[in-house]
Image (cartoon, rainbow, N blue to C red; front, side, top):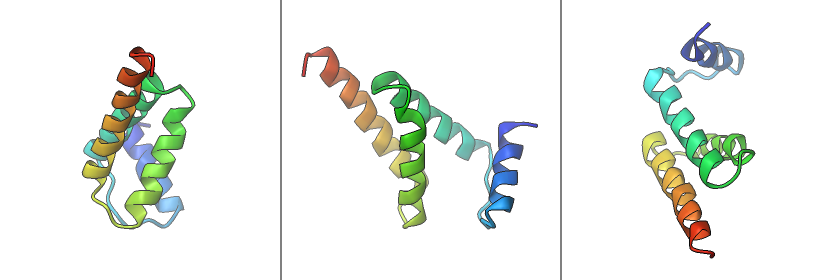
Length: 83
């Protein structure tokens, strides 16, 4: 089973009607990578969960994920500066 197929199974189980495709899965994985590597490993699932809550309230998924990735990367650069 691919991740896209898994995501589609999860959507069906949760009775979510939106289509989930490769771009959606890639976006979530990229965000999780940025959070895990820039903040802390446990930040990956927490950040993905919070993205889901936010998107459920209306923001564009791509824009919200991009903003969170930028925030995570900013955290990493701030940590490197000793902030």
